[in-house]
Length: 99
Image 1 (spheres, helix red, strand yellow):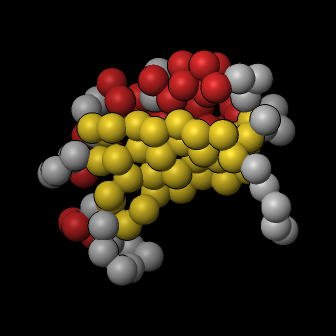
Image 2 (cartoon, helix red, strand yellow):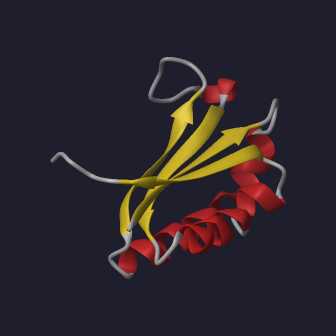
Image 3 (cartoon, one colour):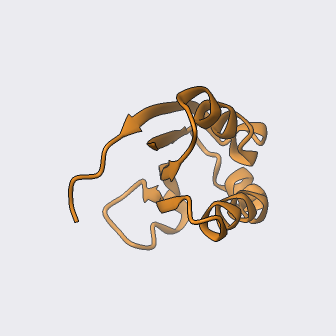
């Protein structure tokens, strides 16, 4: 089943985000290479594709996992969690309708 994982950034964590990004992307590439990633990306903190120093308010990942606990465990192990970027992570089942 698909699961949507929403990570919410804390205040002034852009430096930590940039430092943890390579390890974060490695995990996403692994999901992609396994055919389990539908989409992933950050949410700019301002209405701009490149928010610059404003940074990001969080990220969204939609990926396939065997169960909600498996998806939650994957989310809990995210480098952004370990680096203190995310102050909260929400994992919910997702059913794709379109496209």
